[in-house]
Image 1 (tube, rainbow, N blue to C red):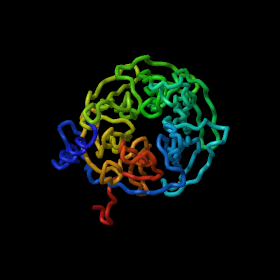
Image 2 (image 1 turned 135 degrees about the vertical axis):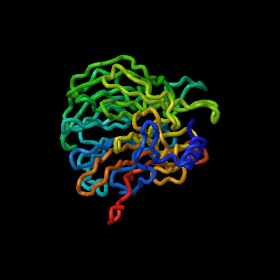
Image 3 (image 1 turned 60 degrees about the vertical axis):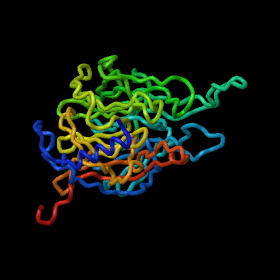
Length: 407
């Protein structure tokens, strides 16, 4: 269950001293409760946005795509947003940024949000996603049940790659899998995997038909051009907004959603997931847990740091979850913090941000998770402008700095 109850239970668990205590299954011997959040850049040069992607290629970090909600108009347009196709680069771990490609440059992928970017063989690959378009519905006169707008968003199943973020190659305009957003993608055993995602906008956000479709098929490609469907229906429920990671010879699917709202609020269970699955080949899946200890959610991120899966952030229908969870295998989880981004309240928790893991180096650079941008919208109907709360900040989550004496 998400929301305030989840935050209260999380805080109570933390007070019991769970963080950093090794358990019988060896969950953790590292005291993650001592890890620190540092704001690297409170306002990068790229526009505040959600549904963006970030990755590191060589020594350079890239940020690209995403959506920025526009201020209200009259008449109101549901989901009205600027959609980005720009690419920004940082050579100093997120402190400073330069734009290396404009949104309106027609030599690369069309602007989009809620897509995936992965890296393989020295190249970054962009797959899937959507833009946002609505148009007035063709309603008959005096039709009270006709929505004012219908969704006309484009959904993508193209694949592009680049070595430098400037020069892009389109490998295919149609990968074979259905166009989709909120998909999961990971590079595993030398192949790009795509699974899950959704097609059509959620009527709770955009309004009007058609019905949103969710997927649980799995596809793979070695080159981004030729795609093979490895299963039409995985054993996990169709969903969007799930996290995919690779660890220990497996790829993992973590959380997600198959809807946006539920009724009646606040007494219903949101259509969100907190199950964890893993697979070696995309065909055979093992359910590590049907219900992890953390509240179900979409829009979160997970990374593999110090051989542990670390998950945080995400969307809660009543309040965004204030917690950070760690697991070795995805089967059992321990709570290590209730303040990601040093948050003091759920209004400071992000979702639809992106995160990357920096492994560290022998020159004193600590292994860390970096986060970029994200959405902090809440459903506070007393604040009609809260949907504009998107970020362009950069944060680092890392072990504490050692003293001069190594303590």
